[in-house]
Image (cartoon, rainbow, N blue to C red; front, side):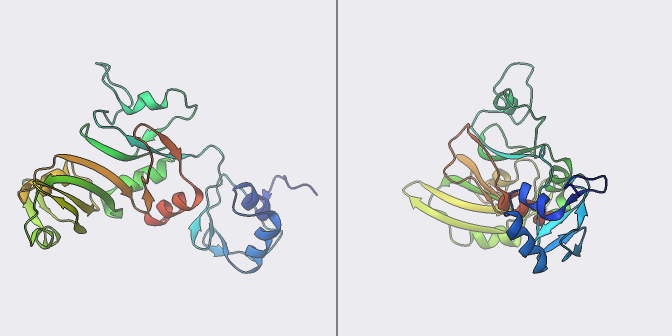
Length: 246
C-alpha cells in the first residue's frame, strides 16, 4: 500500500515533511500522545490525514502543513510606507517583494517614520486574527524620548490615560537607558490603534524622536538588518498560531 492514497497521507509522513522530526521520531511522538489532529490526541500509527484540511498540533503547537504557506519578517526601514503599491513611487513594502513568487500581504502597518518588525504572510486566517483587537497579541517597541524620564510615568501609562479616541494603556513600560537629554524606553502594547505608542508617550510629555518595533508576540526582530527579510521558523509560526487560538 502506498503512502499516497485517496483517503490521505500517513500522519508520520506528514510530520516528517513538515520538518517536525524523522518518520521514526514522529512515530514515537504519536505513541507518546504528543500529537493532536483536529483537537483529538492520535496514538494510531497508520492514521491518514488530508494536509489541506487537517489541523495538527505537536506538544500544543500548531504545525504548518501546506507547502505554499509562508510567513516572513521584514525589518521595515524608516521612510518606507506599509503599502504594496504607491502611485507616487515613494518607497513601500511592495518594493521588497517584487522577486517573490508568493502573493504576500502585510499584517497591520507601521508608520512611515517607524521602523522595525513587520510580518508578511499569505496565511489569511493568521493575518486576520493577528490584526483583530480581540486577540490582543502584544507588540514591543523601543522609543527614543527626551530624558530624563520622570518617575511615575510607567505607573501612569499602565493605569491608563484618556486619549482623544478613548482610554489606552500599556502592558509594560521600562527605561532601558538614560543619557543627558534623552532616554531609551521599552513599551509593550496589545492594541493596534493608529500611532498608539507615539500618542501615549506624547500624552505623558515624552514626544517620540525615533521608534522601532522589536517584537510581535514571541517573534523577535533580533539583529536583523533594516530592509532584510527572513522566513519564520516553525517555533515562531507556532507561537503566533497559539497566540491567536489557531
